[in-house]
Image (cartoon, rainbow, N blue to C red; front, side, top):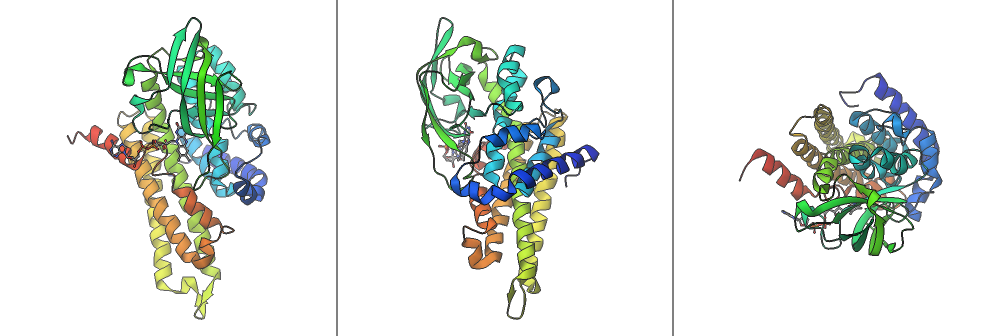
Length: 381
Ligand SMILES: Cc1cc2nc3c(=O)[nH]c(=O)nc-3n(C[C@H](O)[C@H](O)[C@H](O)COP(=O)(O)OP(=O)(O)OC[C@H]3O[C@@H](n4cnc5c(N)ncnc54)[C@H](O)[C@@H]3O)c2cc1C
């Protein structure tokens, strides 16, 4: 549990746990192997009040803040046991906040509300085949022609991109650099917009990851979020909660791998005793628990500070993401080791968690980019 948790968080945990145990866990392995979960799950999750956690009631959400989203997403992983499903089902978490924070009332109603209701799927498209870290250099061009933008370019590694109905897309409407970036919503079915590829990846199998193509794709100017050429700060503001969520997922994955390892160490026998009977295994488990506790403490603290609107939130979120992804990478590796040969088998959960964990030092801004953000805030150069 996070230190900030109160009764409301406890209630949310049991609400999400119930949903994930009933609707995800029984199918987790099958959906991961099939590299897809059913689209009907969005509607079921919305009806169970799970999709709306952290979103305003005006768009059909249940209210709450980043701390509520953090505990809900942890329970989704712990009880659902499919990281791929949790991240696919949660892709709106990065796609609709820019609309809710910077969009008009009409845009919130048209784009965000159907997503919160589980009727539509949302994705966020920033990364391009030519690069993801250097966001200010993105090359997908949107030329204004009358009431439309004509979009040309490509995006890649887009979570839920294959099935998304709305794609919050970063485009270049102006000159070079961050001052030429805008955000537009591209809707599925718009001529010139297509999913060029479904990508195969190391982990997160149950979530789809797409390469998207835009070829003379005409997007109404009414789909511009915020002002033209003012998209970069919108993206930067979005990265802070995204990185906190990713840190929270790392804590959850590590916690799940740890729990699996404790159970296994209690049952598995070697040399006439359980694995837990060997001090080296007990100490491994103790180190796992310690690193998870430290990652959780930092992530929880940063969530509270971000919620208070503290100025250093971006740098702190970067620290939390790095600390939690380091902890997670180490813990899942130890979990595989404790499981021995079984830890290398596809039918065993920790094998999958080991693969899932590899994303976190890369996605949502790499480990190196997080350090650049921290360095900039601290003023080293
Ligand atoms: C499974 C998955 C899901 C994703 N989902 C989404 C999504 O939904 N939407 C989206 O827009 N993107 C998504 N991404 C993309 C992700 O955010 C990018 O992969 C990430 O930002 C890195 O960009 P890149 O892959 O282009 O690497 P690059 O930017 O090419 O970086 C390559 C390497 O160079 C290093 N590097 C780059 N610049 C510097 C520097 N200044 N200093 C030091 N080192 C540097 C990087 O740290 C990295 O190690 C996803 C990626 C994956 C794998």
